[in-house]
Image (cartoon, rainbow, N blue to C red; front, top):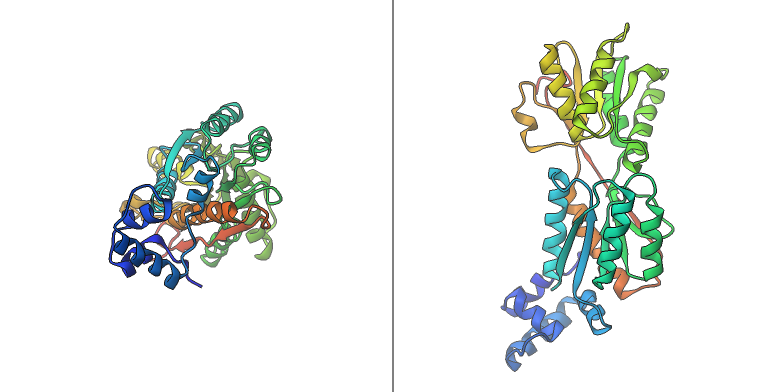
Length: 336
């Protein structure tokens, strides 16, 4: 069943989304005839009253707090854009903060958002030590949704990409090109996404009958510089990999930088695939084969989960996995 949005009500009533918001939230007087059309459209569409507005009646602030790391990452920027659009559509505003992948800063940011009496929180948990922030959210009773890093299915609603199977699919794809020595540049230790993607790499090897070689897995730390150093170590092995998978976009950039500096040509000397697609991936000398995440769907779903939690505080917690897509280009050895 399709979700009815505020704009659907506005279209049926021949008014603006702002007018619908004013009728629902009683934030401004609306002409009685117009108000009647909006109410009729709400009844006909089955639109659920803005749950964030309901929180306002209970002393909320019609605001949603978002706590993420690496806001400069284009993927989190895309996520924030999707969250802001949905929050705005629901008549609320966004408070945004950066955790810098630091547990203490994460806790400080979460408590500051709670002090501002936000109606809900969207959080991408940091690696290690996040229980402090999560505990604070549980104690507050403020609805929260975890995004990207899914670590507490019994305590929070969560939404993120499927991480494990897509990496296994990359392994399958490379094996299909004849590769058996497949290196993996792993993300930061302790991140749920790093763990799941490494599991996917192992899954792919196992189902293709390839014995894991610990030397082929190197720590890229979810960082471009560290990933470049990791790629150098892989290339210095006596038995080099013929293909490499990188665990996220930052590490892909670092690996590409090292390969360019070392004169290693993709895919002639080394096949390369990465988790995370990015806008300029098609502009590379050999366009990148990558796993693309649907950040818009993740952000929209996260806000929908907050809305539903506000409306039904006792509903069971839910974890949603958004499918990721394999985009095949030339860096893996394909023709296009």
